[in-house]
Each structure stands twice: as structure tokens, then as C-alpha cells.
Image 1: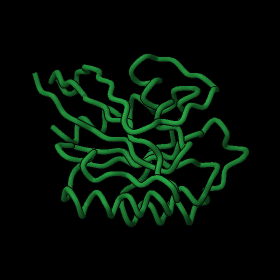
Image 2: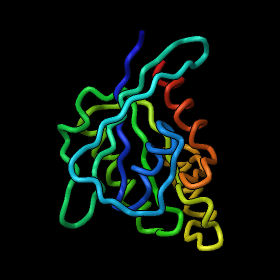
Image 3: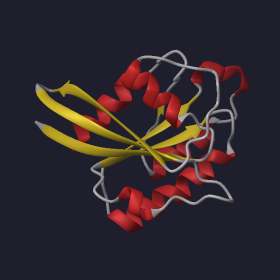
Length: 163
């Protein structure tokens, strides 16, 4: 069996924990709980006929008081950059974190998730923002932890890239 460590990183309150809960447990809660440090989950999936166990590190959100520790990234095979579609400033944090990961670990598979797609009426991400993300990193997945939209697809895509 193949085991791969992946990390979810991004600004605070972008929905990292909710995405993990949706993917691993198929549940969603509107209650906000700030992650302190790291929360680790796992799920075994089959991708292209290969069984792979994902060790999912949900890392606390980055803000002016709390910086992501590079040691959390050690041993990762891939990562998600999570952006809140309703808060444009989270894109800038994601770019900064992307640079940190590449500097500390080198190149590895990455998927960009623009989360909270169910709140598209309150969207703060525009075509120019999405184009900028696509040019610098890669085209993003538009996800909703609430509805489950594109969550499985994003995790499967990252798993496939790690294989």
C-alpha cells in the first residue's frame, strides 16, 4: 500500500478543516473552530487502480500572529493551497505560502482550491485573480466544503499527481 503525506495550507478561516471533514467524513458544520497547530486525518482511496492512503495534515491558518512552521511540511508529497473565494486577500497569503513551500521542500504536486463556491454571490475573486493564479501556479479547483462540490475531484487529482 502506498502512503502519502499531504498538507492543506492557507490563511485563517479559508475552510481547510471543513474541506478535510467533507473529504474524510462526508460532513459539514457551519461552526467555526480555529485549528491550533496541526490536525492529522487519513483516508484510503483508489486512484487509477492504485490504493493510496492519504495522511492529511490540516495546518493552522497563517495570519499576522501565527506563521506556518516549515517543519510541518517535512515529508510531504503534495499540498493544497486553499483560498477563500469571498476574501481576496487570502490569495496573497496563498502566493506567499506557495513560495515558502517551494523554498523549504522543493517542487512537489500542488492543487489550488478556491473554496466557498456555494457563496458565489459574495465572491471577491475575479477573472484577473483566477488568471493570475493560473499563470503562477496552475488553474484552481472551485470547491465548496458545504456542498461537497469538487472536493473529491481535487483530492483525487492531487493523489494522481503524487503517483
